[in-house]
Image (tube, rainbow, N blue to C red; front, side, top):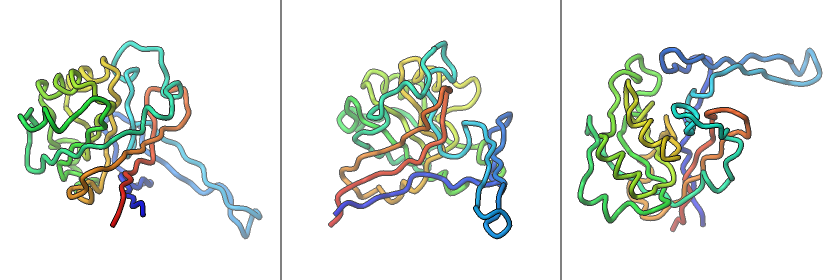
Amino acid sequence: LMKYVDLTQIIDNDTKVYSGDESFSIKQAADLERDGYTAYNIKTGLHVGTHIDIPMHMYKSSKYISEYPLDRFIGNGVLINVVGEDIICLKEEYYKKIKENDIVLFYTGYSSKFGEDDYFENHPVISEELAEFLVIKKIKMLGIDAPSPDKYPYNIHKILLKNDIPLLENITNLNDLVYVEKFEVFAQPLKINAEASLVRAFAQYKGY
């Protein structure tokens, strides 16, 4: 029996975004009783809610997110519990726990603040030493339940994206994976010619 954990934040007209990013807007364009059908229109930046950044976001690259194969965003998940750590540093246990092609998810617990005013200001960050370690390990993707793995000048973004490691940001519900020994992550972007995409991300594991 397969079980699933939704890693995606819901987005609506009240969803806060990173300073300078375009907000998400959804409006009803047609009403069933009035028009005979229902339809909604959306207007959004691509870094709203749960989304993926690829190298083009902060590194000179001509490769759009649409050009990545489907399996680039699917893989074995590894949960790293870092709740309470303001600066997430490299630990000896990560040498054995993290393997090549893993999708590494950092559980900070910060997703509980999603929607609050200071969500984008006081989140935990990953150290440069840890980022360089993840590059050496050749991980497939980094995910975090916070708006970003770093702050200005975004050195962690640059280290990872330069090495073609996408970033899965603003994920949630990682607490549901704390006691799961083995799981897979799925985070498919839209097939668009852009530097990022909103995604519907989830984890899958065998239940008992």
